[in-house]
Length: 466
Image 1 (cartoon, rainbow, N blue to C red):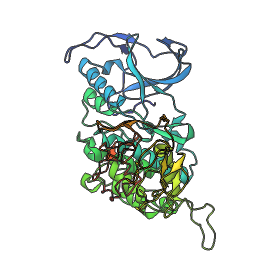
Image 2 (tube, helix red, strand yellow):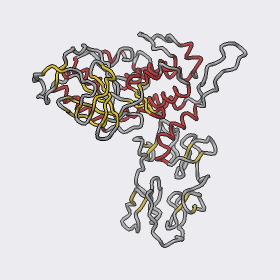
Image 3 (cartoon, rainbow, N blue to C red):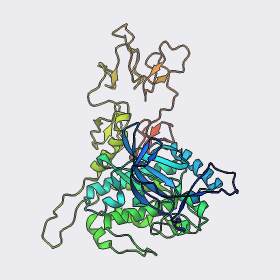
């Protein structure tokens, strides 16, 4: 977590301590309050040092003496927390608490401690702003870009506008995992400070500065963050194309990626991507951007190998969805990661009437070659004729997470993405979901990941444009 840098009046030197919230519109008497000091205790937290200070809050590094871990404490300025503003902020905190995504920083807790309103989150290594100030490989930058787009796309899918996309609000954790933080703070600051628009100057879309933020405003800020990361410079308003640093950008990345940034940075909102989901889908469709610096002189070879775009994309997919989908097999046509139950390759659309590869089950269906347990009476994947169970024992399995809706079914146990009940042969009516994704195929209703896939792996229909 990092301090917020919203535009607006600077906080006074003598800050005040908030009392419990009053009714909207009422005034609250406050006593002067100093900044927290190192070794000072705040509930179970011991302050270690101040990480930063912005227009809305101060952020500290602290030690959780109960859990034995270090955390980030964000403490909004007391003079901004009127009764109505505090209620607005609590509502935003509850909203953010419902977001579950690997690239979004979850809140551990938000509560009053010793009359301070404290927002607690995990402590990262550094901000993206700190990281891009040092040398950054193209492969790593592309991976960061994918993670940033995935985080904002998920928020947009939940109908949430961030309003303050900037490098300071992406926190880097171990294994180069980026997480987006500070949801809702900009909107609360806007209402509290009564500004014409809230956000961070330099990354704020024109319409957001006028008080009319939308999904396209976040897209605009994402375009600027990407441009700064790849070109090494932040364009200055009015963002005439090509901005400063364009030559450096041309030497590093594929023209399709440059076009993606240009479209995101359009001054007119209607010319940008509709939201981050559409931007993420466009990013995923870029096949082979250049991954290194081109030769400075004619006849010299590049000192870097071209980045394998598909490898980067699929590596990120495996980090996010590989485990939940058990996508440990490869499509023979495009080498994309697939899982055993998939009826077609979601990357290239090639049908998978028969599974090619090993299985973790003790036997295989002789028609589709997908795995089966010894006590199943039917293949749940291909609707083939019945089998004679090779064992009378009723085997348990932790993969049984669903229930057959047929009241006459003898066992009723189903595994994810079964198309037919392996006990009664009834077609499964359940719309299987992917735990880490909230998107569904428009044809069959089963879970999909459109940011990566071009086809639904369950019904083989092409996924619509985002």
